[in-house]
Structure formats: structure tokens, C-alpha cells
Image 1: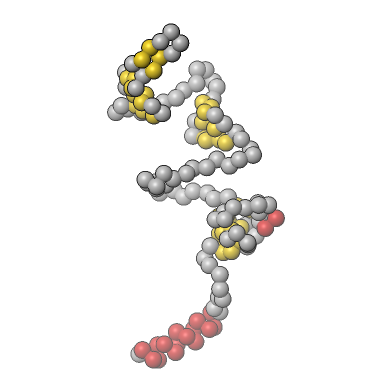
Image 2: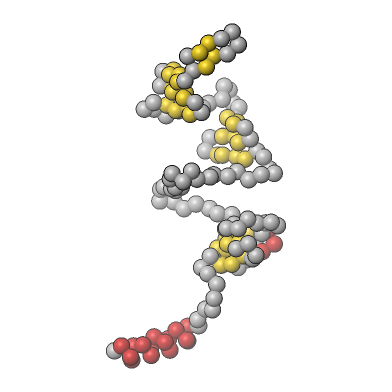
Length: 144
């Protein structure tokens, strides 16, 4: 510890089950809960934590979860998750490459490739039921 008349510098601070070390705060063998005093909200910079909700209070920039090249994002459980959705007219005016959404008008998931939205299933020709039946019959005769 380094103490002067104007500051206190600690390399590590332990307080009951809480360890503060540099820019990391963690609970030792326990959950770390941040609770407001009263009925307020937990606000860190421009992000509000309210129960199970995480809200970006800055409407001019997106909330970004960035990888550290040391892991991955895992969504656990048996339930699904909801991606953004809307029709053609509700597409973002300036989407980023990789923007993914469900198009309720077209009936499929679409991805922005930098130029246009394409079906997440890929682009290309589709086959008719009649064509598929003819191909199946032909290969059944060839292969037996």
C-alpha cells in the first residue's frame, strides 16, 4: 500500500469476499451483487442494469460486446433467443456488414453483405418439386 496526504494506492484490496485488483473486481467463491440503495438503478457509464435487463442509454452508439480472442459467446439453456425483426421498410438505413435480422415480409433470416440483404440460407437458384422428383427418379434408376 502507498499512502500520501492526497491519495491511497493499493495493489490489491480484500474486503470480506471481495477482491479489487487493478481494474478487476471479483467475489471470492460467491456471487458479487451490485444493488442500488433504494429503488434506483445500477448505472455504469451509459449502461443501465435493471433486474434481468441490460439497457444502452447512449442512443447514438451501439452497445458492443467484443471478444478478447480468449473465448466465445455461449447462449445456454433450452430456450431460443430473439434476433431483430421487421419488414423491408424497417431495415436500418446504414447497416453494418453482418447485420442479421428476421424479415417478417419475406419470411426468412437475412444478412447484410455490405451491398444488400441476402437470405441467410444463401443465394442461388431453387428447385421445384417437379424437378426434384425427376432427379430422384433418374438417380434411383441409375443407382438401383
